[in-house]
Amino acid sequence: MNIKQLEKTTITLIAILIFYILLGFFLPLMHDDLLWYSDYGNSMLNSETATLNGRYLGNFFEMIAVKISWIRWLTYGLTSVGLIWLIIKTIDAQKNIIFYFITFIMMLIMPSQIFSQTFGWFAGFYNYVPPILSTLFIIHTILNIIVYNKKMSVHNLVIFYIVCLIGQLFIENITVFNCMFLFLSLIYYFVSYRMINTKLLFGFLMSTIGTMLMFSNPNYHKIFFEGATDYQQVSNDKGFFTKIFETTTSVLPNWIYYNEIVIVIITTLILLFLLIKSKRFSQLDTLKRKSLIVGLLLLPTYYFIIYNQFELAHETHVSLFNIASTLICIIYIVAMILTMSIVLIDRKELIVTYIIMVSMHLISITLIIVSPIGPRNFLIVYVMHLIIVLMLLKRVCDYITFNLKWTISVATVLALVYLSTFSFINHQNELRVQNLKQQIKAYPKKKVYTLPLLPFEHYMQKVTPNEEKYQKFFNEYHGIPDDIKVKYIPFGTNKND
Figure 1 (cartoon, rainbow, N blue to C red):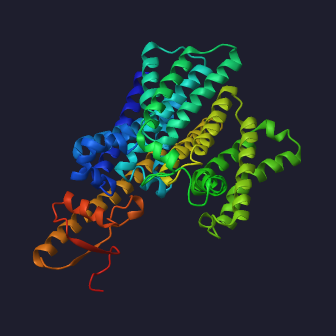
Figure 2 (spheres, one colour):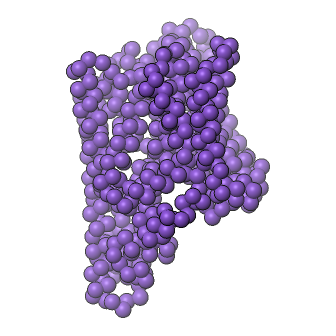
Figure 3 (cartoon, one colour):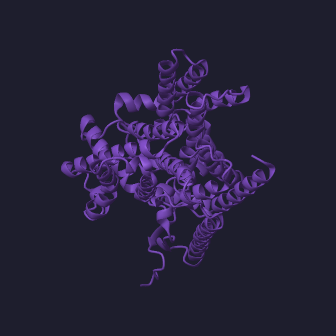
């Protein structure tokens, strides 16, 4: 990378950093954020953190961030930029500035349900985004070892081993995945080269130590041997095998493909474009060509005509529809695999894409026996979808040239829309707190006060208190008596209506 290119990359990353710092500045504390800020959160820090769960680093970062604003804004920005940078590094496109903007755009158009529980909520952010960085770094390092056969510097190896250890102290399914991925990589290397790679072996041992540290927490004894805690459980009241069946045929297809339909459609369109341009595809017989195209178009078509129309995401008890939806996904996966084998000429790029595809499904399988499962669990799945899209776009660049100015313009418009929206949310949040204080001052003996919900609440995680205890945390944070009760009405509604 030459000096001019380095300067462009640096300026781009600084601009993205400023965006995320501002977004973190406008994002109000909410739900569990207020719990960690409260006196109750302090007591957990002093005495109960060790037995809360094994998410030691996620909980630690959250507790510090809610107490010190500038640390919250800065870490929110740096972590977000770090994620984009690692995505680009994973696909080895650091020299192409346009990929930074495409990645930034794609991160902004992720499903709002995923955004609300990760980037729209600090508690979710610190538990779910940093471990994705650790996973991507582990994957990137392993790809360099087993695919690209690159020599690793001592500096990079030390960072790799540290990440293998501390990356296990955030969220359970990513902890399990990291350990599994390192083990499978160790086996792959042994089968391919008939020798054990000591770097991978030591990384696996470090991840195993991290996994043991997490799951040695007393909380998991209750989960595994008593069935549940106040928040987590292994199965549900329907039974263990019923839970596995429902998760496999409804929750996973729903969140890996159907709820991420935008990026699935983008992937499909790129694959179809590459097929049309491929000489190898044109040499196939008519039946094979039609089968591939139908296989790629089947899932998006099924989504719009049946899945979305009949709201099958909510009909998890209808086994026939669940099985049909799962089969559609399997057909789509097979079509993707076959299409990639045709359009990705570079063998190493093809292997990397396959590894990312396997990782995307493997990390989802680790969720089968755990409850509750939420949109936040699938941020890493979206990121892996994005990596596949970017790998394919690298191939598209062989045929067309993307307009950098237009891409920057789209990224800028989206950034301004987000900042304007969250600035408005922040302003309305401050107004309603002032409104409540004015009501209390004017009517001190009133039993219940009325406040509006915030606009665009679906982009945040329970930003309006939905339980009495969270209302008390809300009151404590804003310096309001904890016995004050509030009734919330839709935003824009006159309380006298």
